[in-house]
Image (cartoon, rainbow, N blue to C red; front, side, top):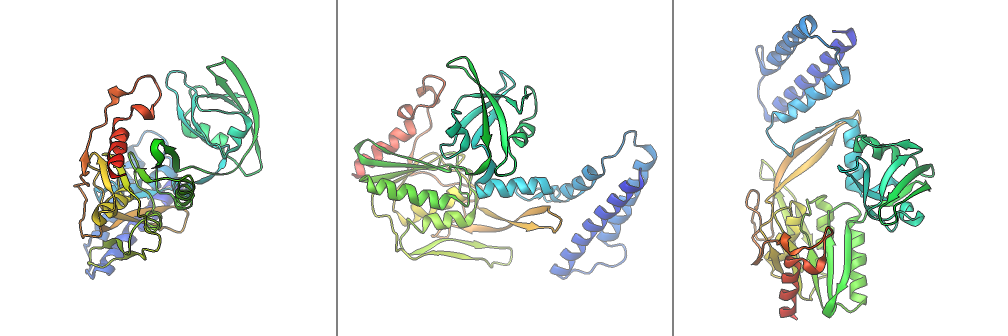
Length: 393
């Protein structure tokens, strides 16, 4: 093993042992000779010697170090407690902020062609303004054919500094044409809200995730639907994986009557209570749509609506994630996310592992959808929500 690798290994072992020592200090445990810290250091040294002597291939120093930290977190056997490298943490911060610098498209790898499919060209983004549309296939970036490349690698080529330009070529199947655009990258807010007025003046808001920008988008949707004369509101939280606790609290402060929104308890039965002053209580008929992928912050929203009895829950039982994670930056750009508490709905229910059962249960009928694209008119769960709303009206 190279000397640099040994230095990395020793640094990682020191960091792991330091965490163990800190934990012992916090809990008041005594660690003397032959302690867990000593055992970790001794065993790591033995492993290092074996690698030095026998390992066939070259060692990636950074990868070795990062995986020691990841292994420490994996030992908690908690899928929500995670170690993030600097690159991973940067991506996490970008995703929860809901803002990034790029061309303003949501993409996925198209396995049939090996190119990248534009799932959504955001109307507030430069790609849409240039002429890019949903369903276009990205084939080249700056003249380079991107066929067969990893999606993360392609996305990194599209992103860049604000004000810089990127040449992107798309294939449009409907016209069997190739289009190349020179697009100036800029900061783009990723829409987490979609809304429209349905028939009979029923407002509809879909919240895809609770990011830091969601509250402002939600308030805009509420105000716009109110101005259009909505008589009742359907909020669609299906497939919403959750997001930022503070964001769902802010969102519910624009909905609930006066009282508790949610409260948390840690291992010492201490925590925080989040309150609504009731000044913006939503008093029109309300229906909330959920399914088995509605989790965490989406369940905080659903649980509060159900406990206060201000709306009807329609769909299937939610995911059941009733625990809270906290991010701890580690000083070198990396970070760890750790489960620190449980959350409870206003009535004191912890739904972790249980989920929230809807008032009106209806399974999604995928067979009702005809064609390749989703058709809202053929969504049987949404149609049931509309039926429930009409009864309220």
